[in-house]
Length: 377
Image (spheres, rainbow, N blue to C red):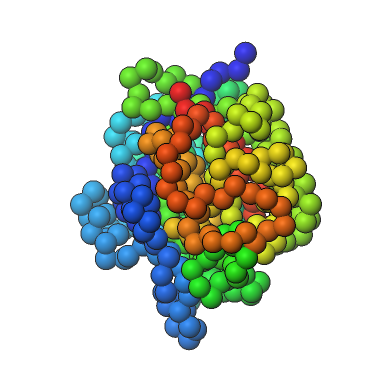
């Protein structure tokens, strides 16, 4: 019999706040971090969700003495600190970093690769600061990284490699990221509208998020969410475009739900990827319908946070768990009229709901897809 794996603590750092409570309050009020930002000097401003630098530095100074950290590292340290203070780090504790680009901003105007740009170095720096005793693990698989990091923690604990794990995810906005997505003509000219008929592209976002995962959750925990099932499948369709048939996402959802032993009718809520690009939203709609999930309440958080790359899956999982704790579904911001060919039950306003089983999905470049099923205990 497999060990039961639980998420018992989490935290997030976003443009909407430096902890989970402030984020939840902002979401309930319908606030969004998406606004016009000038990221590249010789280009127009983009709609994006960015953390205010002054506020970030001020918050960091309140919590840490040393300032010898990059902007992304400050975000990661702030998200982890409250969890580290409440849970022991032992020789059986894993440290897992999820990120797509890491310290990519260090590459600007550099003729040689600085050490800090390597993801392994970034992971070691954060792990070393908090005194982790095991070798850090890096999960970097495009935009499914955050969801996959939870799956990696679950599976390694079940395999007996570790007893518990701290998973932290983070990515920041940079010229490199903006230029890359712009080259695909994927960036929207307005605040993004996932699944809406008038959507025209993504907004890039940035955030850091952290969760504590254990096989030894006690009844004294403030909350517990069981990680029931997971799966990740690559459809190998295209370097950036998703499968038109939704094969990879469909397979990931099917496998995760099979392991979780949960039927489509039992799922109470879907936290979808929902990037507001033409092909991603359509592919998701097809996959959800193939799994007969079209009637389950669904949202995308991209209208609030933008697309936070490797942090998005973990951040959105945290918000999903907050929804379950508060028995409240958050709307898919900016959605008005269905813009995909298959029916979906898009959440349009805050609504009360009893949430036990959550399905979280993600998809990304290179054909990667991932899904996890969470149960509120």
